[in-house]
Image (cartoon, rainbow, N blue to C red; front, side):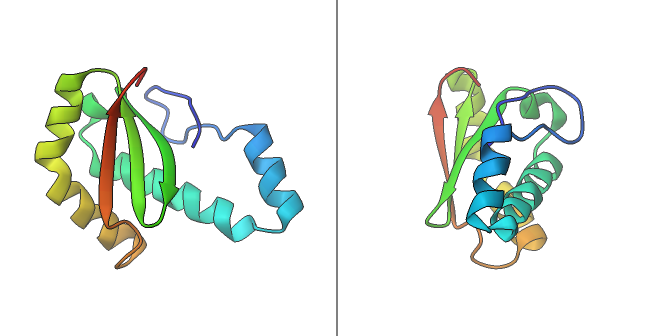
Length: 105
């Protein structure tokens, strides 16, 4: 996922990622990740959004990096609500678990 942070509603996608998707002919994969990013931004409180970064989405697990352990703990408390919001936005089974790691955020 893109590393950009801030209040802007749509975060940039790395050119490397876009080219990789285009060359592999998997524009649907890129589109799915963009839908995931929009759903993530809608599911999170704005105060937490700026302190998180989507890292990966594989095997129905969404990996998120947070700026501090306290943010990770808050996401753990909100995890059921976040997963329900992602299910509503992306469909059942798209994201079954949320994995959180502390890093740069």
